[in-house]
Image (cartoon, rainbow, N blue to C red; front, side, top):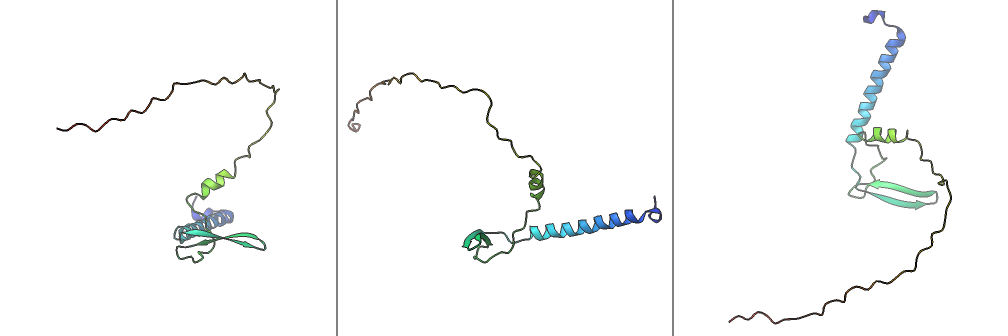
Length: 120
């Protein structure tokens, strides 16, 4: 099929994919070149707890950006179902323990000091 016979929907889809690819590649470039965070400052405000990312000088670094290398793994983690927690079925019984018998071991050996070796 040559370019002259393509439908307008096919041309628009191709153009949309090209624009999405260009925008996402720019976003990944910005995220990779973003300033690394040296730490976080937690501030308690009247509205709740706020965390601010700061660099090595203590200056705020701005909004947090997701790492493009691991964002796909995070997105796949959102697809996993929540674990079901239920009480195990069956009956329970009380197990009586036998009386605890104290076992005696050997006594510790007595310390035996000796003099330094004889030189002479």
